[in-house]
Length: 242
Length: 237
Ligand SMILES: Nc1ncnc2c1ncn2[C@@H]1O[C@H](COP(=O)(O)OP(=O)(O)O)[C@@H](O)[C@H]1O
Ligand SMILES: [Mg+2]
Image (cartoon, rainbow over all chains, first blue to last red; front, side, top):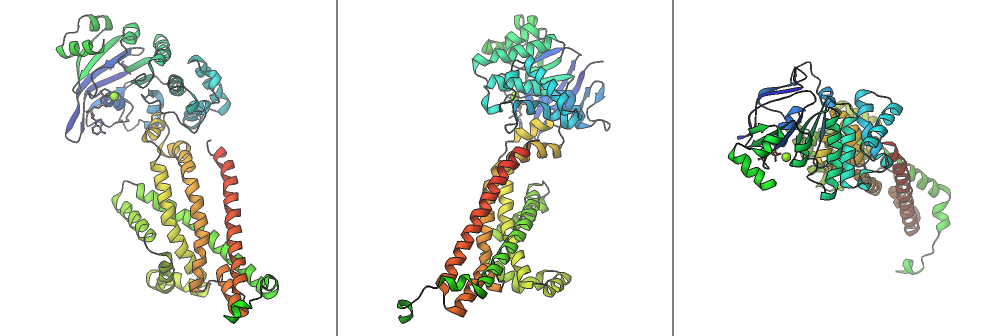
């Protein structure tokens, strides 16, 4: 059974048909990279998966279950699907450690000592355990994004969504975040990554899909995708970003 | 003319005996009416702010009408309105109860509460709206419920923004409370005027009253500041 199965997904903003029938299957442990020009609906698509956006037609199954099924509690669903945003969106009034432990303690009822132990080991994994007691504003962008990843991982999600996690970073900080993501991918995390980092895609993606105008135009394993893009629009796009 | 030239200051007079008792009872009334009005205004202000932030239009409009009406009419007029008009707008039972008790005091509390609540509602609303939308989104995406997101993420950040203007609203309330003497509430200002009319030592009486207002305000603002330092450390979670 696929981890995520999207069928004929349509979404409109008023009259604007932003997602025009997307169907995608993501297997457990698969790493899917989503690229495409700005405004093509990439963010909207992945935000539908954890119901940050509602959609009007189609279905999304998570772990075999329709995410709109009555038996699905939206907060539990979101606990199982982590998301990392372009702008980090850390909680500025809480220390790094508390950013990471808030949801486990309040949503999952993990006790505080246990949550902190897990948080510290996650922070170590992303290389910032020595900053645990600082506030987000005292960290660099790259460090903040790594905290955001640790915050999501603390919920032990089955899937991680990334929405251009490195686009807001200074170039010298991009790799520290990509490396964390690569480690995750190699450890078997199921990931959907909206990114234009083609090195990342080549190294760890199982599949790359190209979106344009609210639809998936082309999809292929990374080698093939970069060597032999079939569609004109894909070629034009790749020419621009490579 | 004569009197002005020969005016003899007599501080002792207003600070002892019956006049001093009057001032003390005035201070107590001022503190009571301010504290009660502030408490009620915080409650009402929060309710109105929430009304204005719901996505339910009729509630939004009531909230908007409330804040605009009471912020944009003079407090003095509102005080007279509640004093003379309350029997028209309030339910019969409430009025009976008010007349049986201290009606002037009650009318004063209502006026100060409603007026201050309108300002507080705006401070709360704009404080909450100033927190970026992505904070709610990030909390909800992490699995927090709407209430938890407000409790642990939005409100703690909003409080930091709201508290300084709330302090100044509280101090305004204390100063505004002096207006209720026009309907016969025997607060500091009322007592000072009474001393003036009995003793003709108005200058001393009003100077003392002014200093009392000043000290109350300073003490209140000091206390709130100390409390906040402690409170803000507590509310993170
Ligand atoms: N809340 C919204 N209301 C109306 N249009 C929106 C909204 N959010 C996004 N859009 C539009 O939907 C399109 C797709 O947006 P998005 O999914 O953010 O694209 P991408 O992430 O690929 O850049 C864009 O044209 C954008 O302007
Ligand atoms: Mg986007």
